[in-house]
Every structure is written in structure tokens, then in C-alpha cells.
Length: 359
View 1 (spheres, rainbow, N blue to C red):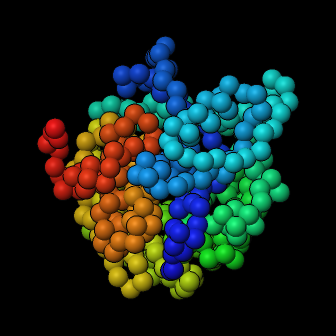
View 2 (cartoon, rainbow, N blue to C red):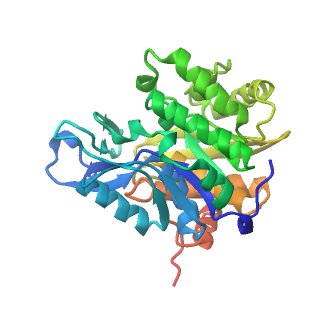
């Protein structure tokens, strides 16, 4: 895997995504009992990109907007506040029953009460993402991108978005951009579309340099045999993941990096958090350590964002996984879905277990 130099690229990281908003009850209350809610702009892919953008690297978002929508304006202002460039078509709403940005309605849980998330994606504008609305030759050939990170959530949104992600992957490959693909299997997205989506996911995975996913993701998205998902035996889970990745490597020999997180839930606010990384023939493992959790949503995205940041900085793989572990842990301390690191020192302090006050 060879990374292009930043001097030859306008952007370190590019993410195609469907932006929406998340609404969450205040004070960790359940949705059905609450009257006060907090609203934020969100998407899994921009959660990943926030690590790089907050730490000073140039980031670009490819998305779509509802023309004249106040929610669209809210999202644009949020992306700007996160130091992200954005590009995408403006589509007319088409009346009250037309397009809109998705709503993610989340109870973040507390103590023994686990989180619950309700996705309301009817009329989602992101399902219209189409390659014809973007000049890929300009973006990858003239402007230049070091890493493009894509998610199975976008690839599976609609037939149009699947083609959109595949064309992005082909263009990125043509111009030497590193391709990162988080499989992110969602059963509701795949219903009655298994044959169509497996073909698209296989094509994207075949040109990817970095593949991210858990046991379920690799088995259901790519058809790779592996261990059962879940369980509390972390050692067995690590061994099972290693065996599965060795099979994935045979199917996708051009992929250099494989990664997943390890999570054991003690309560909504206390998790054992670890990670596994395979680079070439070498394995790097962070055994699960206890972390305090304010809101778990976005922790996995935080890990991916930190790992990609380490790649962009040219660090050794051992530092990729440690930094990713720490940015994932950091994300769970925020009420947003994304981590907002103050600087690298803050992240390394989390890795080192140093929570002392800094004055």
C-alpha cells in the first residue's frame, strides 16, 4: 500500500456520505419518555473523517443536499465547523412528501438500560447520490486525494449509491488513492438485495487497500466463512478473527490492511474496548481495556478515523492501532457521534491511561 504525498494532493481524506441529523433525549433518558431533545448533524463516514479534520488535515465530504431546507443549512454549518470541505448537488424537496435528510432517533442508554436507535430514512436524499453529479476526474486527478474512505452503509442505500461507490473506487484506484472500505453490514438494507449487493461489495473489496469489519460483516457481505459473531471469550474471538482474515486474504490478495474492534459490554457506561489489526503478515492487537462510556454511538467510527490518521501521518502500524483505540475511546466520551480531539497529545494521554488534569 503506497500513500501519495500530501504535497501532491489537495485532500488527505475524502468520504462519500449521506448526511442526516440525530436527535437524542437530554440526560440519558429514553426516547418514549422525553420531551426535550438535542439535535446534531451526523453520518458514520463524517464521524470517521472528524479525527483528521480536527487534527488539521484537509478533509472533503461528497454528499447531497435538499435545496432550501433549514436542516440542510444546519448540516452545512456543522461540516464547516468541523473544518470540512463539502461538495454535492442541491435537489428540490419536491413538496412535503418529497426528499429530506435522514433522522436518527437515539436513546443512548444508561447503566443497565442499553442504547436503542430508531432510523427514520423515508425519502432520504442520500439515496439519490449519483456519480454523474461529481467530476471524479477533477477530484482524484486534478485535486488529488490520499485516502478515500467508504462505508457499506452508503454502498447499500440504493442501487444508485452502490454504483456511485463502485465508480469512486475505480477512479481512486486509477489515480493511486488508497481505498478504505468499512463493510458495515445492515440486514434491513440487504433484504431482497443479497445477490446485487454481494457483487458490488466484492468489486469494491477487490480494489480496496484497507478492509474493516467484524465477523458478521465479512461473512454476510463477502461470503467468507468465519466464527459466530458475539460471545464473551475475547481470546477465542481474537483467534477466530485471525483465522477468518487469513481466508479473506486468499480472496482479496491485493488488500494490505484488515481491522476490527473488540467490545465487551459490562453496562451502557462501562465497556471493555480492544482492537485487532493485520498489516501484511503482521498482527497488532490491543487487548480489551475498561473504558467509561458517556455515549457508545460512534466509537467504532472513531477507531477507524484514528487508524486512518496514523496511516496518513506515516506512522508504523503499531501506532495506528493504538491511536485508533484511543480516538475510539475518546468518541465515547462525547455527546456527538464523533470525537473532537484537541490535539495528538490528548489522544496519546488516553492511550497511556493518563486522565489527570492539564493546566
